[in-house]
Amino acid sequence: MRWLVKLEAAAGDSVTRKEFEAWRARDSRHAIAFEQVAGLWDSPELRGALALHRDRGDFSAPVQDRTNASSVAGRSAASMPRWGTRVAALAAVLLLAVAIARFAGLDDYLNADYVTATGQQRSVVLPDGSTMMLNSASAVAVDFDGPRRTIRLLQGEAYFEVASDPARPFRVLGHYAEVEAIGTAFSVRAAEERDDIVLEEGHVAILPNVRGAQALTLSERQSLAVSAAGAGVISPANLENDLAWVQGRIRFENRPLGQVLDELRRYHRGFIVVAKGHVEQVRVSGNYRLDNPALIVASLAEAVGATLTRLSDHVLILH
Image (cartoon, rainbow, N blue to C red; front, side, top):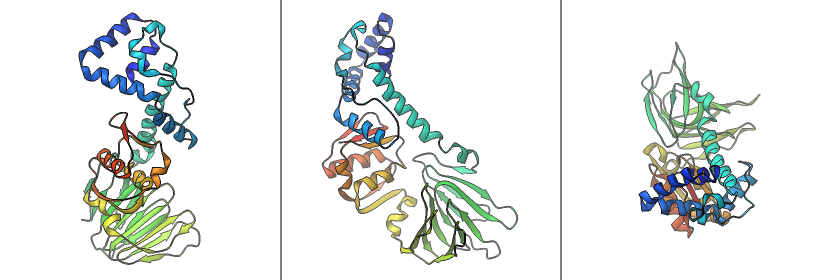
């Protein structure tokens, strides 16, 4: 991708062209990789994926023009067409999206005591002896001064095994609710649209951040979602699936592929795009380790009869 942009930016520069030819000749894999990237630019899969994200408002990029980029390596720099601006736009889109994904929650990370990067998990022993497991891309602030045992979940997901201390209630503050426990095990996931609470054992009290809302109590193996509109319905929890991440796994049963891919995007350090939307409706089941999300996507693509194209280790396209 860098060479595609560089060649166009330096059109007519014989020095740049010689550097490129030397790089391409240095290793046969270089020429193959360049042809794949150049050819992929004109593929309907990538154009469809870019158009899909453009329609969703993720970015704005010129995807309507078609150009045969795959033969650029065989042309003289002086005769290269002005398609490089579109390649540059694609590169800029990917870089911008990476920057947004990395720094969108920068304020949360600056205010946090403990953080995890995308794809990382971390176990922490808290000052009272309780344990906290942070899931991928999570950030928490801890306040254990005096009688307080308060965790503010700034973003992401955390699982708690709380040391019993009736004189000091253990509180977790999400985006839309406050969860209070004395001695129990539960998880809280703070997303943009809602907080999800899953109770493994014991009891917790949940107070939605809505004026006039009443506290609700969860019992063992129950779950609840709380949004800006208030609390949802208390439901049985599927601990094997809901808390599989604590064991470094992802489990799902008869779920639409699109939902599973949304979950995998939380762990993949890059992008997973689908050029053929209908495959997102195919239902899948599985139980995988989370240490290689790209391998999971490849397995699911094969299961639903889709083709997986890797623009890089970080950009995966299903079509």
